[in-house]
View 1 (cartoon, rainbow, N blue to C red):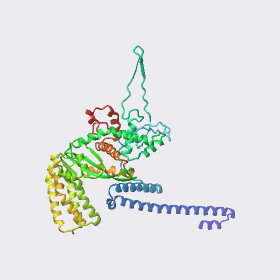
View 2 (tube, rainbow, N blue to C red):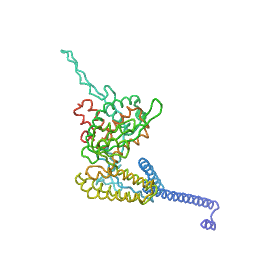
View 3 (cartoon, rainbow, N blue to C red):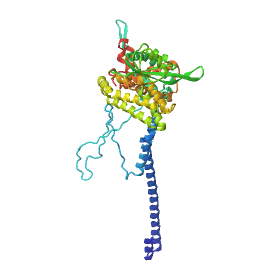
Length: 513
């Protein structure tokens, strides 16, 4: 305003002075708007920074440790997405003030196809002096891309040749196929099976995916193909179970599923029993799922038959008759730990914390022995695990007398002491597992998948799913791509004699991964 007053004192035409005053006021208003925008941006940056700090505390703080299983997985996914969104908003609010921190990323897998895009300057002459440019190096960056399911057609042409003197016609034989005369190639059949049993997509969703590419795949046709694939793969699943029963130590567990009950229009309980080879065994890893209509222990006895060995199980009563008949029981230390963890999470009492510390010591010994031979592992267990187990047992007995009867802590201690003979048995060998986590990890993807498929349509459908899931889970354990393994197997299966069926099992070196 002082500038306007000084101009008014000068001998300037009123019209020119008014014009200058108008321009000045416009600039003042523009500056005021800019100040308001800057203030608003500063407020947003402070709010986003605070929100970013809050989400980082939530994501990496102790509160997130209370979540388990699928809850933790979904929680992590959601918070990671929110963190990225907040970071992007902050970058857009203050692009010049804030440099985005980028963590070092892993190189992209070398086996993937590389499509090279060369970006040359518009001119090979210097923009300042016109001299020719000389190449001194290259800056190379890579981006990962994906091509959704791509449908294409194999066209088989079989020329026919005639012999006039013999009056005969000769043509190449029709290649053998899992589905004779079917229009589905092995790659399509493998893709459908993977979508259904690994990605847990109902057939109507697979139908919709194909329809987006203009390919009509009726659900009834998809269902027919899956049924025929299941029959073709059943001998492989049966053989896998035979080989599993040859192992001297197994894990076992079970998970409930719902089965449609057509007579009532409702669903009823069924169970998927899981058996896994010992992670410390030599040879390929194996998982076999056995679908049954109940949780009766007779199903485990029927599956294992006259098998004798070490069986790692929880405290479910259904295994008791089986164990009385011969197999040697191993108890799961993770189940013992879980009960103390629940008590500690609920009340934070020192007794539960001390139990967790002592159990962690046993797991630290196992981690130290991870790459050892059975002989070396046994020596380490005898030197460190056996004394630690003895100290834990003595501490449990002494602590049991000091806690209130019927409390959560008392029940956790009672459970550990009841299972003690089977719990400490692993330490007397260099090849027995410490817990049942391997088979629980094998079951987990199916438990998550139940959120999608909700129930099995029939007992036959459940058994078919169990057979295919067994082969897929075994392929994954052995580092094979289930889709590639299945396509290879479906191609070879029609002409493979029974004597060579083992060559098609999802084991290492049976097929390219």
